[in-house]
Image (cartoon, rainbow over all chains, first blue to last red; front, side, top):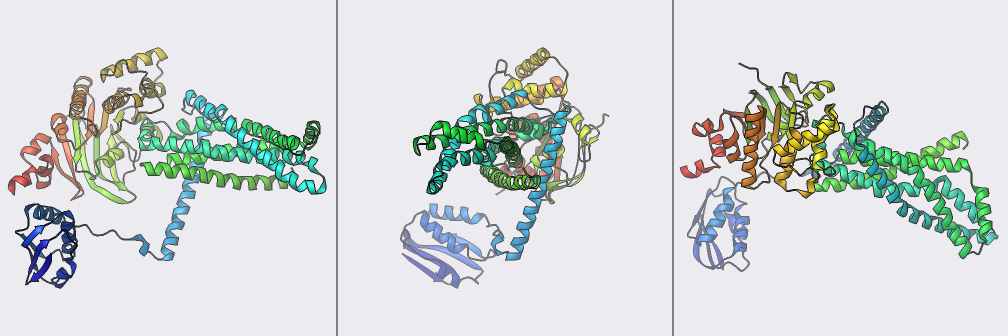
Length: 360
Length: 254
């Protein structure tokens, strides 16, 4: 295989299926206005040879007069077809932006998303107000289906995780309390821990992953299928139709799920105390009853209610603002879960501060 | 002469200040079958979405039945909803609802008909599009062509004055596409509705189109208007000829 340059001619010969380079030869011609590619006796060629040749030729300025002579028929056709379309200008690479430009761009994007999140919250509140006035449009069937999904169908997973949390709390607590011979106080630890915050937080995390993600994915897919456009052009508010049944269902089921979580968590603690640390069941129950406070329990249930609100808002917001491709649905689902958990933690902090201020 | 049902005045369309089409002026007569045509990515669907109020216009006005979509209040927009039916590219049926529920939804929202009356209307609309007996089917249980026809039944539910079609032939085989074209012609003839179709399907636009505009991405505005068959005979420019002949005119010349 040889590649020769003679004046303005590029002559190819021999077996082109072997590796060969035309870039150097073409480089020497770069300022020439004309290039003729000639067959000097090509014995073998394949598509890879055309790719190599094309890569070399695409380095030439677009003004170069290019001619192909006597190349094998298939080869010249392929080359002509590829050369027919002039390449588009390469996209501007955004990574060339300096640090401050990127920082500014990111800042603008964050402020926009905060603004749009706030707008969504306001829309959700007005939608709720419409519901109170009986003017919101949504189907009872959707509400009942959502209620079934985030109510009875979620009980098993909430119970399982809460049982494990109660079990872990009791086990870890007892390990420390054993040093002081105070294992019996594990009952108090589990009761206060579960009713005040752990039951609500665990239920919130499970529901964010289970229901919040499902809200974002369902509504996001509806966006991809133009179903949200159809609703809008029918004059039906997307937030009323899709958000309200989901929000009502979750707000109704969350306090009940928190209650179940509290109870099952205490049961998990009981399991460890009775079977591992050999504390009599009656003693465990007695200490649990002593540690139980209605105030703590109601704070926990209130947490659950607020978490329900946060999960619905994040799920519906990321679903409705989802893009129009499969990738966007994935991103919307991830964002719904991540933001739900982040905002649940923020809200826990706020509620704790308020409770502290009120002395609860 | 009757006043036009849709009128676009110096309309500019696009996204986030990026203009796709500029200075669009056209009128659509009552009872017409009007085609919006052009190459892929020229802004046909964007124009449709602007006309139905899904996208804000960057400039200019669109008057639908005398109401300016660009500046209309929510109440006026709601009034417009009952006058326009839209068939989306994918059908856009609500996947969690049966065909009956899909078609019944606008009737439940905008009429005070009894449940029985709604059932009768839905059955009739589905029969009109050749889907009698499919009331209890879900969108996932029927074919793409049937989904489009069900979408059309939903679009016709409120007996609108204008029906918009976004790429009705997209994703359909030639026979189903022909059936849908015939259905459009029949709806126009029997019900007298104004039909606005966004398409680049040549067979469709020659078959059903009475008037059209050609959105030309190279000049970012309308570069031809009239009857598609007349435009084919007397093309105003090379790009229109190339579009209407699938680029064959260029090949013949070379």
